[in-house]
Image 1 (cartoon, one colour):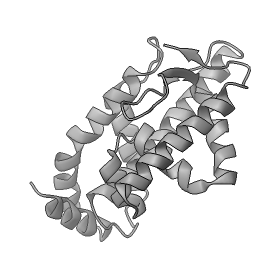
Image 2 (cartoon, rainbow, N blue to C red):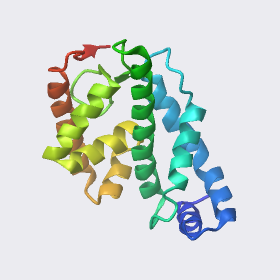
Image 3 (tube, one colour):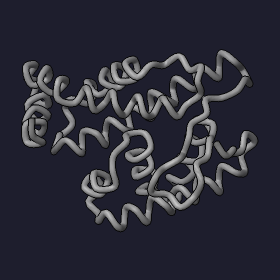
Image 4 (cartoon, rainbow, N blue to C red):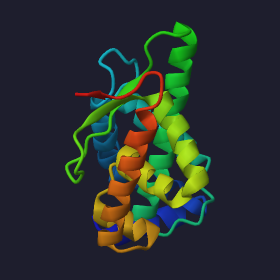
Length: 193
């Protein structure tokens, strides 16, 4: 199955074609589940969200965006990354509300392309830091969301943000450095893995 097939199904799905929706699910489900599994593997061991549950919740929310003008597979996964971020943050907030001050949801910011060592941060602290970064450079937040929450490669992210892979790689390193600096000042702090 080609990227053109996925793009065609996305466009047809946006126009209300239920057959295209079924084909789209078949085409992207394994990739979404792989991203969810990798994302959840970096989180605390006792979280209650499974990769399947994360994908299903994200897909339910994506259905609400069906009328979006879908352009291609990379755009779909960029949007899915943003939706997965919302699902994870909402779940972490619900967990924190139950615990009221208990340990938050910790996630790893490790990455093979980075020049900094892997770190572990509280997901809600990361959300606050991303909101703050968004007031400085919203483009960097989009890049972090696509790479961290969506699992997009440097090349896929470059295509989604219409930039060169070299620029995305530099910006990714810059965004991570800013986040590490910002998160080192939070009460929970950051901890080497």
